[in-house]
Image (cartoon, rainbow, N blue to C red; front, side):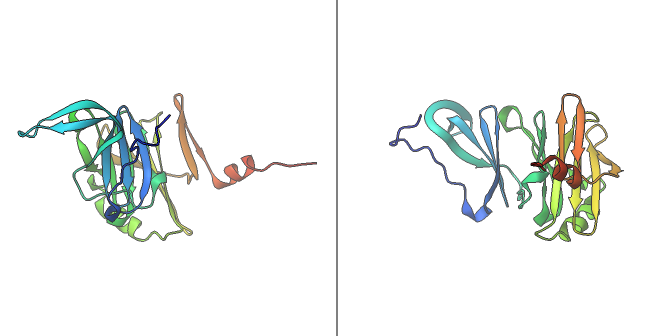
Length: 205
């Protein structure tokens, strides 16, 4: 319950585009805008000393100060490219032609890394630049192989490939073109448009 007298809202900078995705992690709220990724404390706030040190304090604020991660990156308008495993979040920034990993941990973590630069910079730059507004990017974490899987889908072509953290590289082009992917237990499942349509069809006598 919230009192009408409490200020429970926080404004993200509209210059960074619309908010495409919110992800809650422990006591942080991660905010994915089109052109920026930021974080805000939940039910806490940060107090900075003159030396620049940070102390976390409890506060009646629902959302604390919004702090942007370093780097001019966002999620563009592709929230379905997002996947998470442990303290790592994966997503694409179509506007800048890159695939990104956000690592978070104690003290703010490692920040944003451009994983498309691991041998595939030119590929993703060219492929993402060709996408129209009606095209889509699907991402998921494959719990079975421990890979980030991304599928770039257009009206004419579909390209699905996987990123392996163990070798820090893009190891495989895959043959399936899913409309939806998810991990459940120790298994990874993908669904084609035909499967999704069939499961959503209900017949009446």
